[in-house]
Length: 327
Ligand code: GLU
Image 1 (tube, protein in one colour):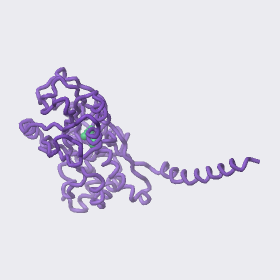
Image 2 (cartoon, protein in one colour; image 1 turned 90 degrees about the vertical axis):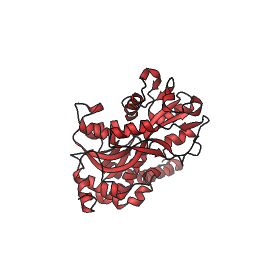
Image 3 (cartoon, rainbow, N blue to C red; image 1 turned 135 degrees about the vertical axis):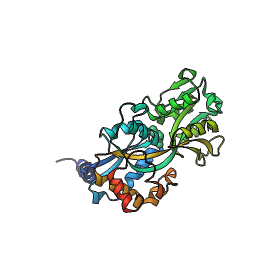
C-alpha cells in the first residue's frame, strides 16, 4: 500500500489534472482562428487581442476560438496570411497597397488575393531618441547608432524610404537590426542612440524606453518633409503624436509626423462566415472594443469600411451592407 501522503498527493494531482485539463483539452480541440499581429510591446498585438476577445464572446456558438500571434509586423503578416499560415493579419496601409499593386517589396509579384476586413487606427512614424545623443531633427541622425528593426521587417523598409527622403545614405549612420520589440531596452543600455517605429500611441515600447535612467524624447519631422510625403501618397496624412500617456518623456506635447492607417485583412479564400463573424462581433461590441486600448478609443463607426486599400472580403462586405455602412 502507498504511503498516505503519496495517496493524498496522487488524488489531489488527479483532481487538479481533471480541473485543468478539461477546458484546456476542449480549447485545444476547438478550431483556432489566428491573427498575425506585431511585437508584444506594439499596438497590433493588443489590437489582435481585442479582436479575439470580441470574437471569443461567442466561442461556444461559433464552435471555435480566436488567438493573436506575435510577428514581425505588416510585412511578415502579408506573407503568412497569403500563404495560409494565419487567417487574419494587421498591416500598415502602405504595405497592403504595395502588395496589392506589385510595388516596392512586391515589384513584379503582387499579392492579388489579399482582402480588407476592417479599417483600424492611425499609426505614426515615430523616431525615439536618447536626449544625450542630441538628435533634435531627423538630419541629426548622421553619425548616430540607429535601430531600424529586424531584417525584412516593416520598420526596416519604412526607415529605408525615410532616410532616402532625408537625403541620407546608409553609410552616413550606423544602422542596427535589433528587432523593434527590444529597441527600448537597447536605447536604455546605450547600445543605440535612436530607433524608428511606425506604431499607434500610446504603446509599451515608448513607455519602456522612457522609464529608464537615460532620458528619452521623440523627434519631430519638419513640415516640408511631412507635406512632401503626404502629397506623394493618398494613404499618408499629417499627424501629431499624442504623448499624454508618457509621463517621463522629455518635451511632451503633440509631435508632428506622418500618419498611416492600420488595416485588418485576410485572403480571398478565407471562409466567408468566419470573416462575417469577426466583423460583426467587433461592430456589435464597438464601444467595448474601443475601450480595449487607448489607440482604439477614437475609432469612428462610419469610417471602418472606408479607404481599405485592398478589395473588401465578401464576409465583411455582407456585414457592412446589412448595417448600411456601404451601399
Ligand atoms: N506598424 C508596425 C508594423 O507594421 C507594427 C506596429 C505594432 O505592432 O503596433 O510592423
